[in-house]
Length: 72
Image 1 (cartoon, rainbow, N blue to C red):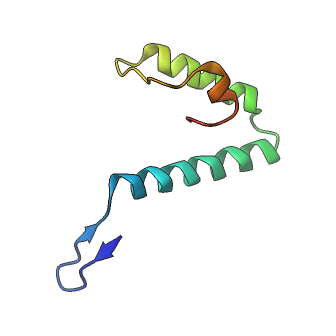
Image 2: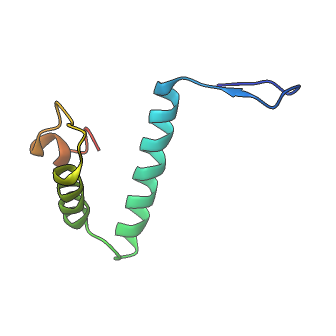
Image 3: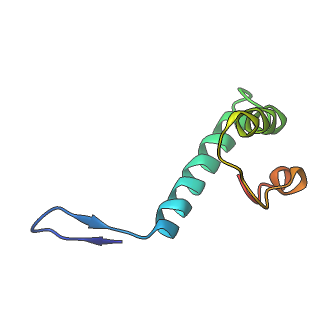
């Protein structure tokens, strides 16, 4: 990530944004599970529901991969 102090512009890659979002999401899910608010199974069920309602197709994200959190 690059930050231009003069203009305030931040330049980053899609990969950096994807990793940031992945880590942020994982941290939130772990905290919710630790506090007993949600279980991993509830999260997976919601992901399945949202995927089924989405016009975007997620290729390569099988149910087994989702359960292993390889493509959340």
